[in-house]
Length: 395
Image 1 (tube, rainbow, N blue to C red):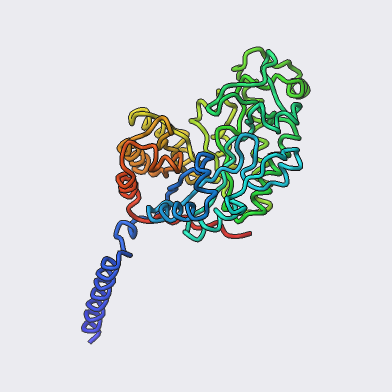
Image 2: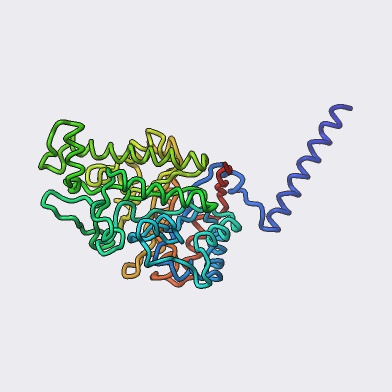
């Protein structure tokens, strides 16, 4: 009798699972790949100042976020600090003397608040992006009103040339600068329902800088030496990099004190360049548990050089500790990227257990050599099933 009931129960269970599979497939809600995929990977996109027309217009923003959800993206990184200005109504910026520009939507809405609410409604994580870090245009109010906050090269030059044009660099070793950046970050973390904060390759300092009076005095006080003439001197590089690391650790503690489960994300350049050329020891940050998520920018025109970068030991080290992804260029206004290149690079990253984040939203479909529908179909093949990133638990 027991054997009869056991066989009957097994038949019923098989029938039930079969029926569930048929119904799921029929309704489009059941996917074997999704069932087998237990790991949640980063599938993100940066929303830059080039995307301003979209994020400022509520209906356009809703369409954009709906499209991202339908294509199984799970994270957006909207810019909140760019060119010396906060991209949201910031009391901290105004108190610092940045008065002439308050960034709002077409209906007068707080863009960051609106974007966060709409994104969460679509199941997307929102991690605001501190794009400019310690960098600012020399003509910005910030640079003009606080010249003592700036650092310089040996010959007194205060500017350098970056992808954003000519810029100055806030001195990351000065307490006033650290306090200003910290206050901006905490303003975002405490006043908006965001899921974290992200810093990129500009939360750093080109190695040519650090020869201002304040930094020289601090270096002499701590080492009893004069800064060497060689900007690549290992001890001089390490001392400055350690100072930036100490600030990032302090900033992480401040963020976690207000929102313990906030994602502290970093999107740097590849490590050898980041550390040697920009004093950004992001591998040390990972090893010291300062970073919760790493997205390494690997903007390469061919697959061979791309794979060489994403297989470096430091990326594998990070991957063992925290969610790790690769930043992939999807195009610029004057330099489109084919969907074939995007797909090959994305699949190379995914096959190695890495997430992907695309730079930037508008170039996903626009400024492209293919029609929009072909581009969207191409992204659909990259993410054929959902990969949910659950929101951090509220503090």
